[in-house]
Length: 83
Image 1 (cartoon, rainbow, N blue to C red):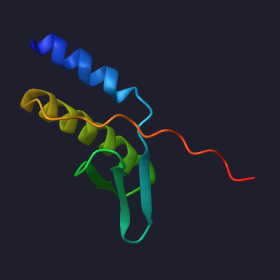
Image 2: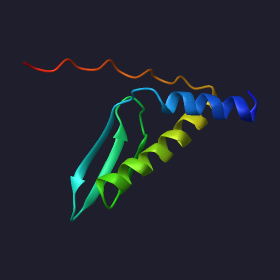
Image 3: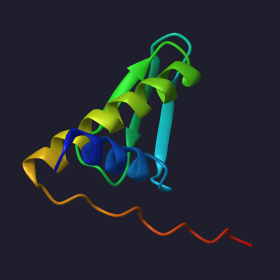
């Protein structure tokens, strides 16, 4: 895989609907993780910072997995709202 193909595939996967989870509080900070990607997590002082950092962590996770030819889980289907 060329560098250009790698970047294209990382960008494609970043646009998929993976479940991004942010939790925490203003005192202790916020943690974010991608539910479907084991070990893909980060933190930030605000929810917005944690989400921004999570996008960077996800890009690095995906690139590493693609280079190593590790399996990359697809996004989980969206849950139906509870009525």
